[in-house]
Length: 228
Image (cartoon, rainbow, N blue to C red; front, side, top):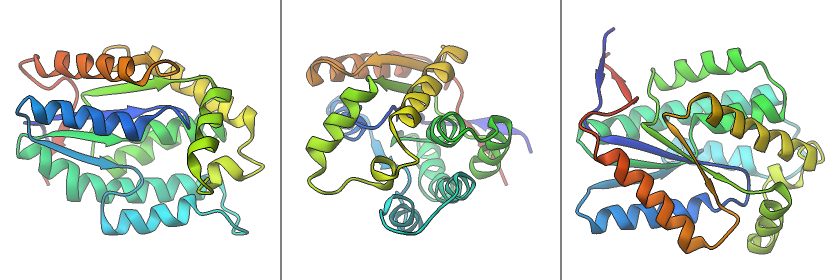
C-alpha cells in the first residue's frame, strides 16, 4: 500500500514521569485553539473505550505480575485502537492531533527501561500504527529525582505501578530518561528537547513556539496515513 501525506499535523508529548506532559498538552491545545486551529487532544494509553480499559490494567497497582513483554503488547493494543479510531480520522479531517505520549514511550520504558529488544519493539509499533509517526515529538526532559518528587506530591494517593513497583526503581527511571535522550538525538528533525524542570509558563511558551514552527511548514514532515 502506498502511504499518503496526512492533511493535519500530529504532535506527541513525551518525557519521564513527572515532566508535566498532561498539563502542557492541555496548555498547547488551548493556545492552538485560541489561534483558530481545530485540535484533537488525546492520550496514551487510552483515548478510546478499549484503550481506557487497557489503561486501567496497565497502571493499576496490586499483586498482579506483568512482564515487560506483556506491557509492550498491551500498550500497542491500546495504541492501535487509538490510531485507527481517533488519530487517523482526525488527521484526515485536517485537524491538529496532540497526544500525551505515543510510541516513543514504549521504546523508552519497555525498551531502554526494561531492556527489551528495540528492533522487536519497532516492528510491533509498525504493526500497531500502520506507519503513522508524529510530525513533531516534544520531549519534556526533567531529572529523575525531580520528576518522581513532583509525581509523589501531585498524586494524592494515585501513584501508578510505574512509580510503586520495585522493578521500576530509580535506576529504571534513569534508563528511561537516558533512552528518551538517545531517541531525540537520533532524530533531531522530529524531536525537540525542552527543559521541563523550570517555570511551567516558560515551558509552555517553548512548546507553543515549536508547534507553531511546525504549522508554518507547507507539508507534514513525517506523519503517514496508509489506505487500506
